[in-house]
Image (cartoon, rainbow over the protein chains, first blue to last red):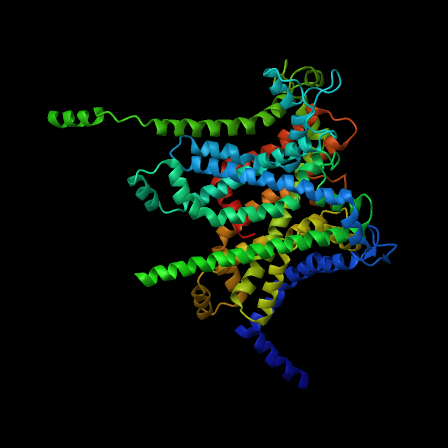
Amino acid sequence: MKTKRKHAPFKKWIKTYEGQKFYISVLFLLIPVLLLAVFTFVPAVNMIVYSFQDRDKYGANVSWVGIQNYKTIFTDTSILSTFKNSLYYLCGSFIQQVIALLVASILCSKIRAKGLFKGILFFPYLMNGVAVSIIFKKFFVKGERGIVPEGTLNSVLSVFGIEPIKWISAESPLLANICLVFVSIWRYVGFDIIMYIGAINSISPDLYEAADLDGANPWQRFKYIVFPSIKPIISLQLILAVKGAISVFEIPYIITGGTMNTSTFVIDTINTAFSKNKVGLASAMAVILLVIIIIVTLLQKYFFREDGSKLRQRRKTREGKR
Amino acid sequence: MKERSNVRHSVIRQEKPIYWSRIIVKTFSYLVLAIGCIMVFIPIAAVIFGAFKDSKDVANTGALELPTHWVFDNFKTAFIDGKVLKGLGNTAIIIVVSCVGTIMTGTMTAFVIQRFDGKMTRFIKAAFLLATLLPNISMQVTVFQIMYKLGLYRTFAAPIVLYVGTDIISIYIFMQFLSQIPTSLDESGIIDGASYPRIYFSIILPNLKPAIATVLIIKFVGIYNDFYTPNLYMSEDDPVVSTVLYSFISGKRTQWEIVFAGIILCIIPTLIMFLTLQKYIYNGLVSGAVKE
């Protein structure tokens, strides 16, 4: 009798909106929160714990080693040199931004077959990364008579009478890395073009009209109207470029496998964990990557909040003047 | 009437002054675009030509020379023996299940977090926000241990669980969109006596359609092109598109003509999707990136 009485109000309560809110919240959030915990937060905590341990891929043979793993990272020249490689990609993404801005402003002017050009330049971004990497593996190959046919680039250059060049080789890590950066630009520049087109198109046409009345040339138009309006997006892109440069993985992993001094920090981390089976060391590397990314993200958040508040302030003062 | 047409004529005939600077800018613009398109085409052209060559042709002709005789067997070999067909099938399964999963969990999470304001939901929202900071790719070092312990290693469940469970961008897109759906719509449902589940299914979900389309496009492109996750977690016997292509070149001897045919077969679905959904793809991918 007593239990029944206790149950009745609960049954009623669950039908009220208050009760519904409760059970809907629990039901709807149960799986997402569980997945978030198991596949994001538990591994994140594990990562920090493992970084002080020596352990293998399957979690056997665990021993504590203190900060030894971190010491290894900062003394191992092969790991440190991957940061140098990241600089190539960082320079590459600056060049990529310049190209994207140029093409985007061209595509926003009066041009025929805009959609076609836009589509062609964007399509590499949609292509499968492995396919892109294989295409460029073929592109940069230097042939050997009777064994390996000449690659695409050397074939093209031979038309102009240029001798075949060994593009990706251990002798010239600089050239090899430049080639890989080129692939990265080839693949991703289309996306930036679309981003910038969106930004440029959102500029009010009144401004252009005013500029035309004043007889501005295209460069002046870009300098005084387009550039100031899309500055926030450019700086966002540059910050994302830093994040991108530090976490390059797919293209060098498939084209060179990280050999010939073209490895990146992420390739090294993955190889350390899964080929060399040193999960402790790899976790320490992952922690360092995490710290770098968090610093960059915080900088991004800081600068962008600043920008936003400045804008708002400016708008307020302008309204005040009116 | 006559007079009028005369007037018109004279207006048209009035010569425009030639702006040399404008012509130079135009020429430069088309030149840049043309060079860009050639840069995109040359590497791909070598693959297209190569796919129709036989092994002798590949060795003896230049990369950009047309095949001496056109061969179609490479496609058959890549499709069946090269397991491209199997890869496409497996990828399709993973994409469908992951998309359904993401839409369910994403919209539900966004609904609760956005509509029921409270300490608990704010805390959960902060947790999801914090998770965006963690670099997915290097996290796999420790995620792998968990996958292994849960017995998901070398199953389809591993990539699916990751695509559904660690996709926070989608939740953000849904939340952003939900904040634009007025709460008065929910309230009118409540006045009519609808329960919250009813509100979710018959008011919120239909109104989220554009956001769902965006998420579907981002997911399709992301999963179809992902190499890292399937390479790490799936067995070689059950390849997806990316790992099939990778298996072509990771062996001892690379048969380039088969590889090229495989690449073309794997790019065709992307090309079809791009041509049919072009406009949505531009908007979808850009809106996904801005939220990152």
